Amino acid sequence: MELLGGITIIVAGLMVGNELTVSLFLHPTLNKMPDDVHARVVQAFARLFGRVMPFWYALTALLTLVLVLMHRQNALLIASAVLWFFAIVYTVIFPVPVNNRVTKWDLLRLPATWKMERSKWDRYHRARVVILLAALVCLVFGA
Image 1 (cartoon, rainbow, N blue to C red):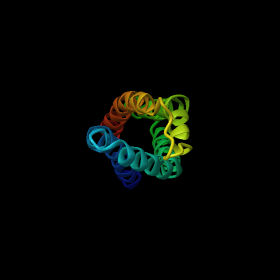
Image 2 (cartoon, rainbow, N blue to C red):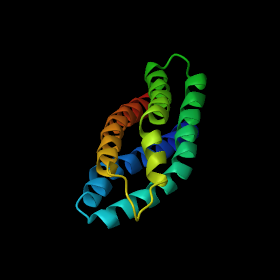
Image 3 (tube, rainbow, N blue to C red):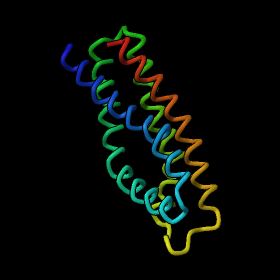
């Protein structure tokens, strides 16, 4: 049981750390790059994270749910699971549609609104990071 809690914290912590890094370091740095570099890198990351993150989010939520089922009376674990699932729903509704549009950009003819799309995604992502951090804190203290 302690092993499962430790594994769950590691998986969740790495995921949240990745998302925090994107928000605090990667995208602010890209915003200072020339447009052609910015768009190319953002599109590459959108494709990569679009393939990897759904599994990472699902694994984290599933591991947290298993902990909840093992400790049904633990309010912090329940809160963590609810927040992970809320983060998934939020992600599918808000950042993913923007991300999907980014992956389809023609880099030689960027849409006129591409910078607005990037800003919108960054705002959605910052809100998601807050949710993820809250879920991680509940997980750590609950486990």
